[in-house]
Length: 166
Image 1 (tube, rainbow, N blue to C red):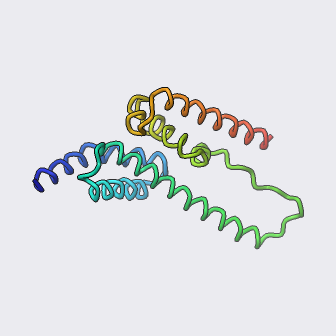
Image 2 (cartoon, rainbow, N blue to C red; image 1 turned 120 degrees about the vertical axis):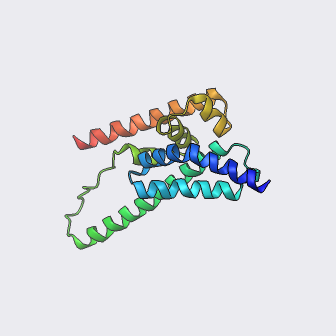
Image 3 (cartoon, helix red, strand yellow; image 1 turned 90 degrees about the horizontal axis):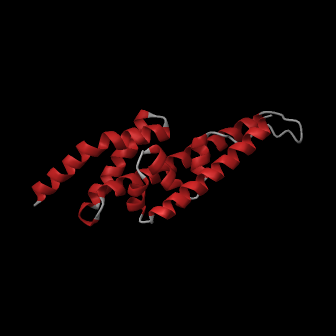
């Protein structure tokens, strides 16, 4: 039994790791971090191997959560660096030079999880809506509505960011 379990896990790893790591790479823009996240997702899957009904979905949802944690860490570091440099610089009162970062990655990160996960799975992992529906446990119509709502929020935020730069 243990042998077949290890064989199944090995086959799953060989089949999914490259795609999962590539997906993570597009999200974090760093090879080493992407591989760490993909490896951690597989480690967590392995720890729960007998209780996970849908390993593919488990891997992507786990990786999405790890990517979110990575983005949060980067944002905390960015804010800390900004505070450190702002304290060292003398700025005139009322000078608000920090604009909202219009990068799509940060905008996606700011979405509520209900909207963020379908965006990551559909647009970044190239999964069809049907598969996103299965992985998230939501109806296809709900996934479509969530994707639409997320696109509208992103569009509005980008529009505001662009208006501030003019």
